[in-house]
Image 1 (cartoon, helix red, strand yellow):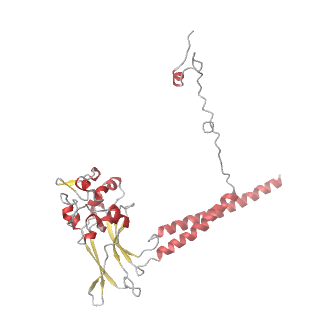
Image 2 (cartoon, helix red, strand yellow):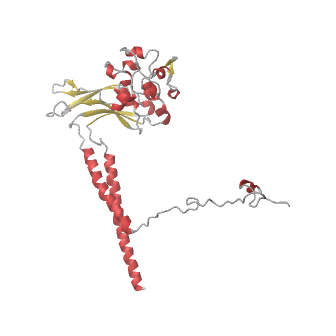
Image 3 (cartoon, rainbow, N blue to C red):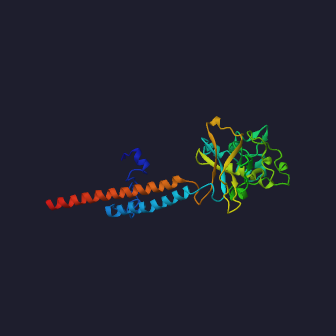
Length: 324
């Protein structure tokens, strides 16, 4: 006896009544998941449940936003320590290839990585047949302007402001992520066989005369290597410490800023700036406070509008029921 079946039967394991075989079925297993018997909960949105949420969000967010905004605006140059930042605009440190262009093993002092950097550093991996230390596009583009601040005294003689260059990097970066290669006291000898990045004016072991702030553990270098998330950013450059509680850190008067220009920005259509600021628990960030106030105000306003609409149409519905 001939039996007809099609290709679909083969995919399903043969015809449903194949001789000598068990019956095949496409029915899902009898489980809670495949039979869609899992417990479910669907919220029922009513005016009594939605309106309080809008009002609660408004009552919580508006005071928080006001507090954050006032705290941000209270940051002044005369309070506490003063932080000097350099700022760059139109510089995309968040570009994918740029962010990857580094060798963390090399920066952590690994001897093998020092002489054989990661291929992620290309095209800033080798120069003149020598490995570059530190390698990569991030290190190669390090900011290298020098900023000096002076107070113009009554006799017009500039008084230099002490700028502290240590203590500006994160503790974990300084003590964990960045280390110089092992070896003797001569740092130049530890970097033997390597060459400086293409755009640098001097090698990494000559960044500072202080041995605790030289090489890969130079804090200016460490700050630069922590890439920014946005194309307009600022990075901490120096710390101006407050010397006396009786006098402001930067007294009122005329100041002069001396910039040794080494870092060109015209080729990427950028701009440079210097910022002086104190610091608070949240930093100078008025946008965060404004965002909280805006969200809270919108939620509160929506709550009022929905309350009016609900009151109006509920009364209309009750009137229609009575008329009928």
